[in-house]
Image 1 (cartoon, helix red, strand yellow):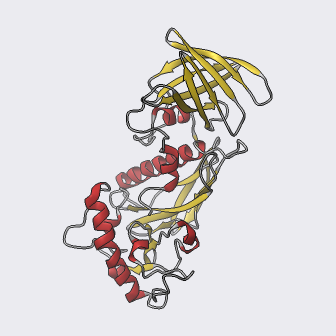
Image 2 (tube, one colour):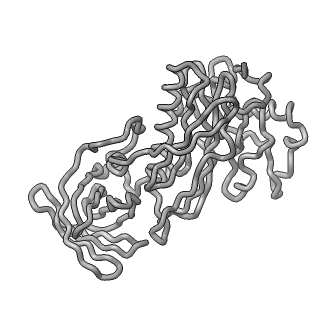
Length: 359
């Protein structure tokens, strides 16, 4: 099921149950090095976990540990770091011991807000994620001509994440709104990248714009493809996510705007009504449309076999999607054992089947 990007789910998942302590963030030093650390704990107060990063690198290191009295002992399983902390007034003090047995004194103070945040950071990021982005910048790179319009690429140095901005071809207010949304999308991908470290302590995410963006007369879109291998995750994974914008307003569009199904589509992405609508109303309608326009690819197959069964409505309940010169591309989403079937290139519904038109 693709409801929200799978990497975002992974990075925001917590081992805690309901009733856990709220996250607490701290900033300070480990020897000569500046670090930021965020801690959580379970309802008993005995189990502690969190993550920290070096300001010079910004990449998260996951921590697990215990609290005995006032002393917390945390270990980074995949890097070999060990941190012992205890409260000292409003601060935390202790020692960080690296895998090479180097012992560094630690002193941290509580942080409740992030300063020097870039513009257009997504508003729903956690304090830890905002502290991770504080002070970072998007550096302009080369311009490129595309569909009769100009785009400029921007890159964030710590993560290597690149995304474009549109330089013209749409009304100025729409252009400003579109580029602000693109900036938010880029910062979200930067946050995803910095939040995923592999078992070797290196960057665990590889992602970027898949193919060329499309800048049509009335709509603009691009497809983002990412793969990740985060320490502590059950297995590596990958996903595709599309983004489409209305060139008249600059706003990012919803799938229900493009392909409304039923008398009153449910547009709020939460709750039983939305899940039921997507599974019971939307997905069967998509199967019928795809069967009409792609009869060969939509032929039913043996459900017990190893072929891709695109006639199964379940794989179209929560598709990736984007607008293209040919119409609406939809990406199927299969269970893990059949992930090679995800996101076929042929699954495009023509503009004639949509509620929006290209001109």
